[in-house]
Amino acid sequence: MDTQGFLYTARMSNSLAKEVPEEYWDKQLIDEVGTLRELFKHIIRVRDVYTDGLRAGFIEFPGQMPSDEENIVDELERSMIDLFNELAKERVDKIQMNGQSLTLMETLTTAVHHEGIHQGQYYVALRHAGIDRPKQWETDWGM
Image (cartoon, rainbow, N blue to C red):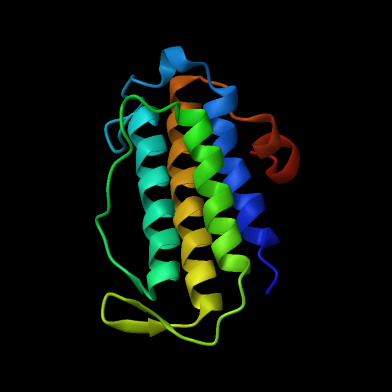
């Protein structure tokens, strides 16, 4: 299965941590969303839940938050590669999630959708706070 779409989307999420200065990571940009640091840790946790779930045959939340000792950028990259590699494996079995039986394609689209939701939220938050968005967001999507 072609999983390049996930890699593309995850790289767009990772670009937030690479391009937005860390001085903004702990600031509440708008009331409706958490801080960037909270987002990054959430994305790592969710990617790890999906990765572990693909290995086990069932996706179970909430999973473990990454340690405060870990390097966020490194963990975003690691979690992206781990999930990409699991999604790329051939499977015939369904994946169980929230009492539903999902195909690998449905699991892939759910992971992409999750990343996209948060990209939209933080596009609004960054714009509202007057902080530049990642270059790829501007060049690829005109955001």
